[in-house]
Amino acid sequence: MFPAVLPLADGNKVVMNTIKEHLEMLQQKFNKYFGESVQDFDWVRDPFVANSEYLPINIQEEIADLKADRTLKLKLLEVPLDTFVTYLHRITYVGEHSFRDDPTVKQLYEEIIRDMNSEDPDEILTGFLLCYDEFFVHILEGSEEMILRHLHRIYALVDGGEARLGTMKLLIACHNVRQRFYKQWAARTTRPPTLLQDIDPACEAETTWRHVRTCITKLHQLSKFLSQRTGVALKTVIDRLSETVPTCLPESVLLNFVLQCKSLPNLRKYMNAHCTISTSESYQGKYSTVSACICQAPSLRQ
Image (tube, rainbow, N blue to C red; front, side):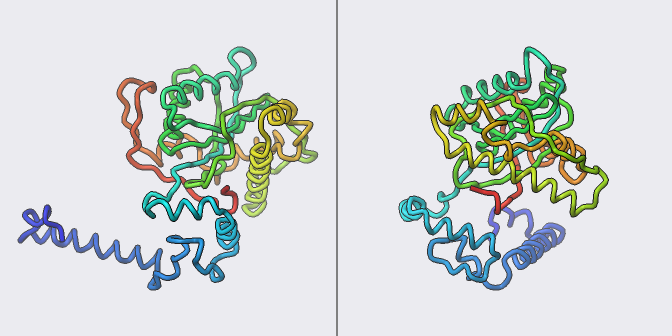
């Protein structure tokens, strides 16, 4: 089974036992995640014909959307199964900043995104940067490697004292999303709506996650709304966000609460935990992702 290992393992009980333990552990993991019935996962192989009645309701809803997408159905017939996968990821993170004048936080991000997209035009980053006086929210779409390179570039500037950014928290990350919300990257500074009451940072876990989900839902609705506009209509909406879509904008109090939420991962720790990067010359060099993992949020994927 392992011809390359056989010369080393032959007669070596330590190596043989290590291989045996590894295979036994692998079998346990397979049993844990997939169970005994492979038929339960037919929907993964072909969601267009599989029976989804036994699945959780959120997955049933997504499969219903898939079955209604004739373009994807035709594509599945045209390409091999192992290539029918999206490598598009979306992360949303919240941060605080102390920019007041030139350069602004908006200008900082514009330069970074412009440089990265010009360096690799085949895998561009798209998304939206929502800026307030003290806080910002960044919705970023692209390949896993490009997103991680972006995070490393941001923290390289922070560590070098070139970016006045404070605490940053990962709000949500989705992998293998079906399509982008945004066709390009844009940023706007606007006035946040006012929350009439403060949020207790020491509230119970259930209340905490209710506030976090409210923030995620607002941003998801904002992205969905903007994705349905193009050209002049899109620019008009973006330039007047506080007037056109105030209910889709998270309040400053809510963002401050999110940044204090201990249950959400710090963006730097998330970056370090989910990837190993090798660099050639400073942060401007090419990055190579050795390993990465981005969590799923099925109910908010597009």
